Image 1 (cartoon, one colour):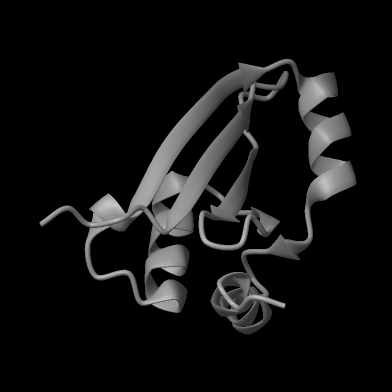
Image 2: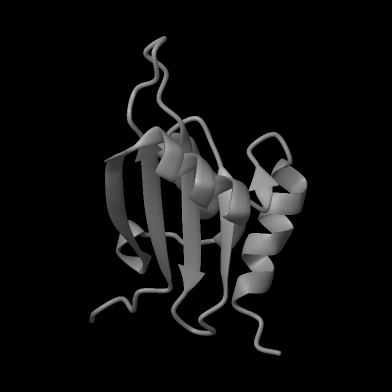
Length: 105
């Protein structure tokens, strides 16, 4: 039996800055409702664990992941500043928002 894909998780990274830092933001989209949220995290591993815990997804086939790496820093900043709704340290708010993604209005 095939497991339906419940979420699409997009990981976006910047190019390294002058100090060698890489920045991340993630877009999580529900395939059921089409709703999405954008959040910042330090890497894809943290993003995965937050999504998995909040959504109750037992198996990873329920979440399809895509990557956009090495975006020019100015483009990355422009897109992330306009879109980021939650930060990793706001775990409770973020988890509530993930659960709400699949609720049809």
